[in-house]
Length: 338
Length: 282
Ligand SMILES: Nc1ncnc2c1ncn2[C@@H]1O[C@H](COP(=O)(O)OP(=O)(O)OP(=O)(O)O)[C@@H](O)[C@H]1O
Ligand SMILES: [Mg+2]
Image (cartoon, rainbow over all chains, first blue to last red; front, side, top):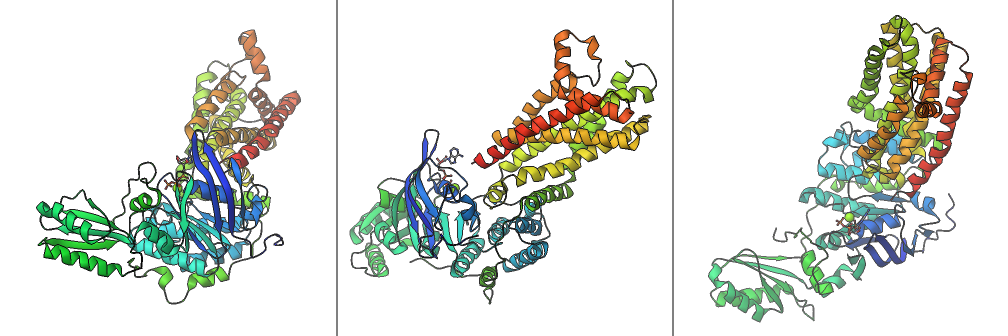
């Protein structure tokens, strides 16, 4: 395949004004996006924001209603095959044949990538080994755990090393250990030179993996920047405090509001309070501020059972970035109180 | 304030296996249309291997139709089993295969809604490979179902005058017609990717084709409008042609031609339609 039209300095993804309408629903409502080559780009948004739809449009799987998009220098409408040859998609829901074994899944995909029988077998073995799945390779995928399935699904995207990898919510539904494994895989893939666009509902995940983050809500990009830039807009974190005595909650709320900049929310738990911290203008040490606040609570004789400092949840981030809560019905409150 | 999680698990192991793997990628090559179709055919066969229940329709339907209708209608036709099987067996063969075809459409409809389909579609392979690869495994199923009908017939006392050659020719004709129906259901499945809907639509088409035909009843006993339908019903022609070939009856050249024309016509419409619908999906 000719590489003439894909000069290395072009962005991996360049999209302007993407619109996709499902009936009355504007799933994408004018998306502009530029992803540099070699970057891990995070696409952060709640359920129904349009993350999957964006990936499907860019991966040439869905037609769209207006806008232009070039992927690896190729137009997504007129040069589909050129894009498909160099891009891999690992969808939100495992794209595997449940009744075939892991090995057979990879063999079939190897043949579809034009590998010879021998090369396909070799690659399948190598992929299974590198993803720690050799022991499970002979078993039907239907019996895999969520983490194994995810790993195989990502492996299936690497039969031929792609120049661009789309990962749609690669860790949703995984336990913390499997999630860390997937994170490390993503880092290694990126380190090897593949551009990665990953979607997530977790600010922490975008923070951990992505150099550049776009926040999407209701089909629009509502904020974009590096993790540090976004965090400075969102606030530096959330302080969670659990009291020994629920009677003291009003008092504690007053003390905290006086000691720190930000708003204090009583939590559902009658003993708990949480506070989204504003970022201090001069990048002062957050710990010092929090320590100060805790001292003030102690001075006021407020008994504290537990203190935790966590990332702002996606809800809080949305509220801060957009002034309104995240899109329709965000149900999964991330537990930041680990 | 983020707490970078301790890294454990596969990728953390000493050497960077992932990096090596990505650096050592096989060359990109576009799979040929034939190789890709054969791969999808192989995939279908592997699915049968892992889940032989999938063959239930291809086994049960031919047995049911052949045994049931032979004894149901055999009595109405004079003569010994060997004699009425001459009339009925090529008919139950045609009808069995026609009915079995709809399950291929249902399987495709199910396939289309899985994530695996998206991954296949995101590859730069020939867009027809999934549908046409499916036909390869369908053909194997139809041959298998045909063998069941023929063996059952032999057991019940049928002795085809056309011999092995005649039977094989009839089976080939019936299977070819079945494959054209497969393409029709493939188009339906790509239009409405819901197995239950595909089965319903196929039933609505196949019921009149099966019963308003000359398979079980002499058209001369039917009212005129029904006779007119029977005469244009492609399944009637397929059954007549199969009868002629299996019994070496002669005078069935016209039916063979009509059966082939019907097969070619359905294919000519449905193959491009299925391809179009395949690339339009999503
Ligand atoms: N095939 C479809 N038909 C109709 N509406 C659709 C279709 N696909 C997506 N939508 C709608 O488009 C909007 C965006 O959906 P999309 O799947 O892109 O969101 P998402 O950000 O991936 O959400 P999630 O986090 O739940 O995966 C939603 O309102 C969804 O209901
Ligand atoms: Mg999604």
